[in-house]
Length: 379
Ligand SMILES: NC(=O)c1ccc[n+]([C@@H]2O[C@H](COP(=O)([O-])OP(=O)(O)OC[C@H]3O[C@@H](n4cnc5c(N)ncnc54)[C@H](O)[C@@H]3O)[C@@H](O)[C@H]2O)c1
Ligand SMILES: [Zn+2]
Ligand SMILES: [Zn+2]
Image 1 (cartoon, rainbow, N blue to C red):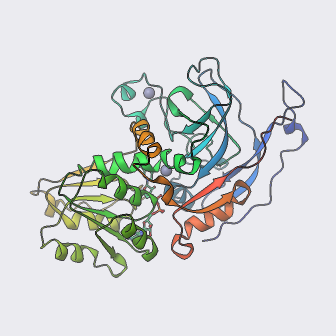
Image 2: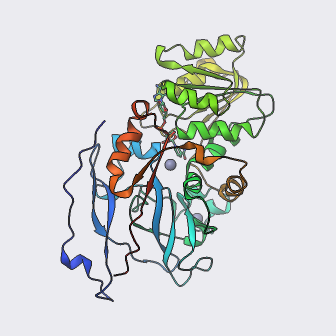
Image 3: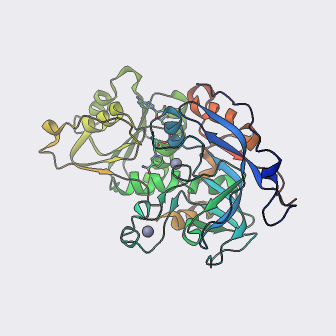
């Protein structure tokens, strides 16, 4: 898939003058969504504080999620033309609103994909992704992190302080994929010692689901995908068996491997009816199907087979409540997040980065790191 690189749009001289300070630059470069398969890297106004609980962060490292690829395909029609994409990032605080108490200008921070007020009924129930005044906003309903600067609402809860020497490439895996894998896959699927676990999808999220599942000592982890390179990576990350499902026979192979018993946990990490079907076909009695893939179309629920099998099916938009704990595990080296990185680009090359990530099998891509090496814009 190739993305048409629109002619760079220029904001004009009037946008490079600040209202309060004529010497300050007020435009920035950003990756902007203009409808399915239409991205452009263009000039946009630099974000400003809107509420006293906001912070403005200069993004130094960002990356691309499988969810961004769904958006690009048109799987999320609610995303507006003109939206700056991206919900993952590390950066330096540029400015804070007067009610932000945890952070100061110059702090290095991890940006969580989830914005939460901490006070509403859903936040009180730890379902931060369903915050009535927040949730998954970045790169969705407000402008995101694939830009030089981003506005972070409720900065006190949406940002995490990083030491100045923190490895940004490892830290950026905590914005979305690590908490997603742990919360929506491993914990929702109740991965337990001795379990047979199948993960359908060996993208970055499937692969970190493998890493976080290993923390719970399952007996077997079977990884299913159609990309042989990613299956090899899965094997090197500790998968006990890998299956290429291109021939449509993955379910039969899993049943044969398990003496027709099936698996205790089946984690869907793709977002297609076909991959959800594999999970339904291989789940053992008493098992857990944990869906974390983003789906654009309905799936067939095989209750005629599952009704008497004591199955639980969970769906989850990541809450990111485990981020602090995962940050500690990454910082201590218990989780080697950096091994997810396959490619590195400058922000100015972000269209190329999208092309690489969208053609992962051809490019042998896992997570693509995008660095904003441009100097801080103060004049
Ligand atoms: N629930 C959440 O909160 C949440 C958060 C983040 C990501 N996600 C979702 O997790 C999923 C995985 O994300 P990612 O970044 O790893 O995406 P990705 O696009 O890099 O990976 C998807 C993988 O699925 C494989 N695949 C595609 N079709 C397949 C098929 N028919 N059979 C088997 N494998 C197939 C691809 O080869 C690829 O390796 C996406 O759907 C993403 O939107 C959900
Ligand atoms: Zn994501
Ligand atoms: Zn809330």
